[in-house]
Every structure is written in C-alpha cells, then in structure tokens.
Amino acid sequence: GQQLNQSPQSMFIQEGEDVSMNCTSSSIFNTWLWYKQEPGEGPVLLIALYKAGELTSNGRLTAQFGITRKDSFLNISASIPSDVGIYFCAGPNTGNQFYFGTGTSLTVIP
Amino acid sequence: EAGVAQSPRYKIIEKRQSVAFWCNPISGHATLYWYQQILGQGPKLLIQFQNNGVVDDSQLPKDRFSAERLKGVDSTLKIQPAKLEDSAVYLCASSFPPGNEQYFGPGTRLTVT
Image 1: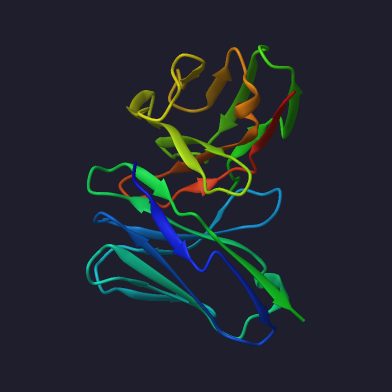
Image 2: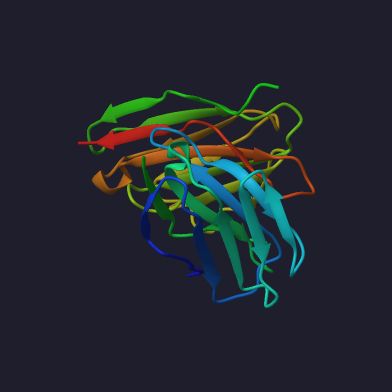
C-alpha cells in the first residue's frame, strides 16, 4: 500500500537550533499537510500546502510542497522546548485516498 | 468554536468482547474520518464519510469493524469481536469541503486484554 516515508525518524537537538525534516512518497500527492502530535492528544494541523513549489510559513515553521509533488519539507527555526512532539506529514494522493507519514519524533534539550 | 469530541477517552476490554466509540465533529463539517493509530505509527485511515455516505472504507476490516453516520453529524465506530491487535488509539477527524484540512479529536485509547 501507499507509504509516506519521513526522515529522520527521530531528532535530539539543543534549544535554539533549527530543525529540518522531510516526507517522500512513491506517488503524486495533491495536498501536503503537516501535523504535530503530543502524547495523549490528537494531531494538530500546522501547515497546509496546495500547489507544487508552494512555500508557506506559520510563525517559526516553514513548509514547502516539492516540485515533483512527491515530497514535502518542514523547517522549524530557533527551536524551543514546547516544539517537542511527533511531526507527521499527510495528504490525499491522486486517487483521493488519505495517508499519514511514519512520523519524526523531535526532542528539544533545554 | 468547539472542536471534535470523542468518547470514551479510555476503554479496556477482553478479547472477543465488543466496543463502540462515539464522535461528534466540528459543527458544519460534512466530512468525517475514523483513524486507527497503533503505538509508534502514524494514523491509518479506516473510513471516510461525506455527510452520511461512505467515501472510502478500503482499509476497514469489515469482518469485525463497522461504522455509521446516520444523520450526517455524529458517528459511531464499532468493533465486534475485538482482537488483541486492535489495541490502539482510535482518532476521529472532520473537515469542511472542499479542503482536506482535517481537525482531530483527542482519541479513544483502546486496550484489548
């Protein structure tokens, strides 16, 4: 079945550092969504991307919709302890079936 | 604006028992989704409703799982009989068409013993 692969699987960084993570698919996606999930909670939508090449920011977060439509990137600048969580990419493929990625676990060390 | 509501938050049952989860989406959201999230993995879509019609249930184990959304608002997901491998968090989400931006509830953590 469809697989959205995220890398890295986990990250341990110092507070204040910048973070980059990506998501790749074997097929074309129409939309890329980035979510953050904290323990015991449902995923929370961070950024939505709708066009190839689109670059969108939300505060310290910036995400890009890859030109090939098979990948997306999320950057977090100047990380803070509350950025801790698991970050998921997600979206519908061209068949409108919705998938989530494998997740990137972020730990920020104060 | 109230978010997606789910109940119960936690449920422990023995294998072969049945269980039901309830979800109330954000007001006005026509699309409702049920996901299964096994520990350490991303959510996996089980079923998607558009109003009270099923859009996608290709990953729903239909021999034991069922879901309904009779009046196009709240929804119930049922498992009967439960297996050990059904232990997971069951998440409900909703969205307002035509966008795909889904908003999630807190989930129901199911433990099957």
